[in-house]
Image (cartoon, rainbow, N blue to C red; front, top):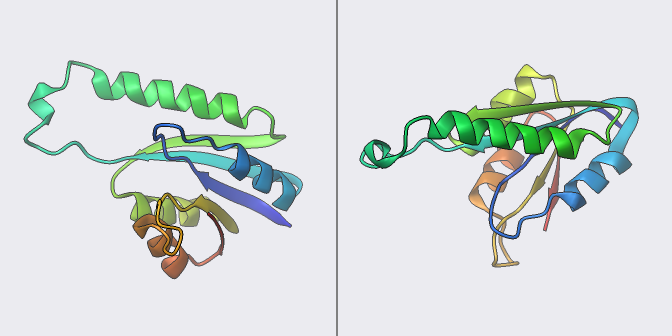
Length: 133
């Protein structure tokens, strides 16, 4: 059982985090803190001028609200919306929050491989990593 679980959430079409949340419940010690995070990648410099005023703040707040809604069923929960390269930010946040387990889905359609972010996290994490297919 784990006391501090980090669950990265990728917002992709048709993506449902119910499996990750179910696993987080199963692996949680009594009173565990479950932290849901989303990492927003930086917008390329050539596209930033085409984005409407305040788009990042609006999107960040909408994601934060959705994460809070999803985390509400846990006794102790935290949410964060970060910006940067997903693999690196997941590991940095896991270390900063002293996570003892990361529950991460692989988003590759090719079942024989796992995605680049999942690979990076699994290879470099200093805590347990539970990868899902």
